[in-house]
Image (cartoon, rainbow, N blue to C red; front, side, top):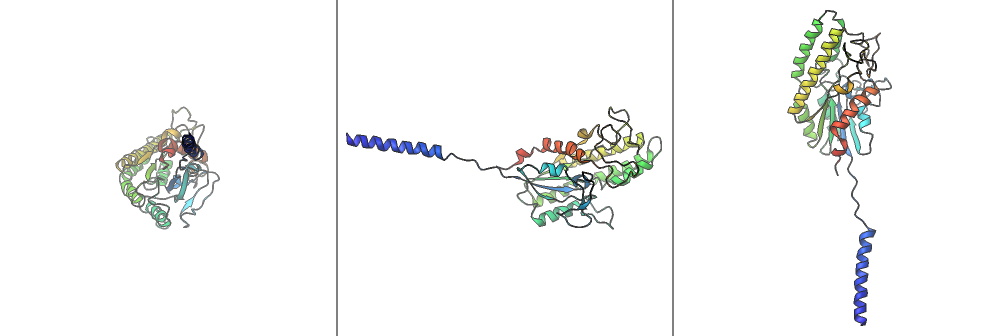
Length: 305
């Protein structure tokens, strides 16, 4: 009998030990690895026009010609959660995909931004997401606006002629080469090419107070916004060919252009080409760009487990 009791006791002790072990030390899942994020681009990626209205040297690319604006903007907001780590923000106002538009003031190109990020170790095999805006300066954004401002013809013929030049320049944008360069350093990164918003309110829109914002004639404003649509369409097509995401923000900004009742753009009528004019305000970046980035990129799904 004693042997039976001893065996029963031993069996009970062993079973109890297993129960205790299974309840005392439950398996704990490892926390997800933060999303490694890098940003490149021109003024629309550099917070140009955000609050406060400042211009400073980009600390990630410390040369006098790489300037950034204030914060917050869509990049700083996107990288706020602990699940996202901003490895580097290399955007520069005035940046181009091709050669700098002003050789005397050589703003680092997108390729040079990418090269610096790779040299710093910010862009690498662990990079999960890259965002950028680029192409606007290559097609002559500032010159386009200036031409349309001076065009007082009934059908904005001069503005239309520049729009055709811009469309031709857009067709030549090296989107595939830019994406290939990013993937050469960050082969696993998802690349999101952000588009541009329409800037001027048009006649007949529900929220329009002054078509063209008083800076462009109604006809010129329509030509300019159509030019933005053309550039976005070209970028979207090229992004698809390069197998990357194009983020279209035009719908988000609709009703918030210059000349609308609730503009999300900086605009000083006395100086129509002032350096922060025609760029989103902080609200434009946070209510225009940021929500579309989140809805299309779904950062939670990009986080590696």
